[in-house]
Image (cartoon, rainbow, N blue to C red):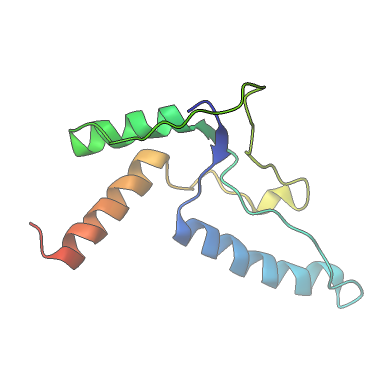
Length: 113
């Protein structure tokens, strides 16, 4: 529950990938097409905080199964890019808006009004 990860909405990530591909062409001028770029929201979030957002949006508790884990340091699985950081945008959807969009899409696909 205390593991930290980086969550990004799919469309935001897709936009970043397209922009990065265009950037490879313009910035490297074909001299070095090999660039390692991490795509992330840059907004690390703990799993327990993610569940709180989901519970708030869905108005019900999220069922979670806890398994015994080996004691140790909290794991930080969030990522941060150090290459072409100008490609990141503050216009990325927040976790709340991204979850709302996913919920709306699921409701639409399932025929739930």
